[in-house]
Image (cartoon, rainbow, N blue to C red):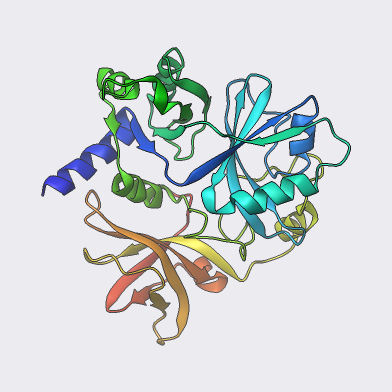
Length: 316
């Protein structure tokens, strides 16, 4: 019961004030030099040249055939752009960046100091971010709304305070915000249809399959690696499968990889993430389903539990 109340409070904060979530297992690169912005714009799916002042960005690095190499976040710090990406992709992305640096005046450096990354979700997230930017320990931040509820990203140096109370906790408390945890974020991201690299999609996925064409891809910018395939898919192609939200009867989340079947008993998909949602009183999940099934919306089964198929970007 205590855990359920805590999760409910986190979800409430994300909708009404601010929910701060520490990010785990990320690495950072510093990209400097006078060509940094145009060079990165030719490699990433997001548009750096039309970025609003003070905004962070979410984007992708694609392989030449249009599949996702990794996702990443970008935030500006003075004369540098910092790339924040999954730790497991550090060496592969380092090699990718080095390989595509030819004549440009660009310097790429792994971030070597201590750092923490926080994502803040909710209508007061930007207020928290702006207040935090005046605190000792702040390194970089940007407005980034991933949930549709308001949002921001902060990079912090944990070595500059030693009294045991993080300055961000004080800022949150003053605004009735909450310092969240992994489970709270997991439920919120599934509720809002936000996939995670390495869990819900990976290097075998096209952006359109995972719904990333809506959140991480610009179709109005100039050329970038993998653009031709992605644009052809957008204009006249059809993917074979789609990542969808799933409403599952009961209170027992099925494991990752659990099969989804249709009324004939045929396997038509599988679960990638699932958690019980206390506000909805049933399990919410993300999972892959065949495109034809995604368009029909089910009904499906996961074991003995009934499943409804919900697009990633509709209200629950």
